[in-house]
Image (cartoon, rainbow, N blue to C red):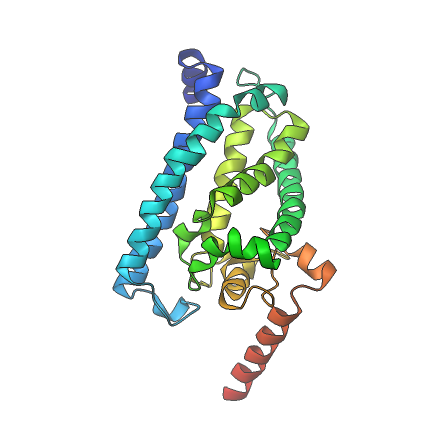
Length: 262
């Protein structure tokens, strides 16, 4: 690991690493983690764990991939390049020494907490009538989400998501490796939340307050004014403000029904 980092630092500039490197890492993790769920849905594998019975058509899946490639290269990449002054202003560095694992862990936990707070309020505002109709409805074109739909959104929403993700690191001045690790974890989380499957090994079965696919899938199934479940990773904001009551009620009814059937 140290050899790889040393090679990157000595052969590429901070600009190349922060902008082009981050872009390539993001795309690789996003598509490698998201594409398998298209394969599962198309071929009917692991249907016992699928949250909704409905499947997306191949045409709908291909439309999503085409739009994503367009957004990534025409919106995300220029945005990352233009954001380089932000990286330098937030005191990001790529040189040695690296942070200790304790410091990295604390920073990433802090990033999750900050991102959850910013995302919750921004997402809730996006569900007001005008913003939903003009911006957020693009993301909700898929009532049955799959992994790649996590980043299928209006360009204006992409800007907001970028802000919510970067505000934590901007406050701490991270090492580039910490920033990359945060980005990878955030991508994996949002792909999992939109994957459309709830497995026995899903993190929501083990981590308290973690939302996951079951929590977010409910959000996609309902009308914009009644959906709730606005949180990103951890669901404490929905719990505090009572915007998960509908989901909790439905989940309780389903659990009671399952117990009666047994």
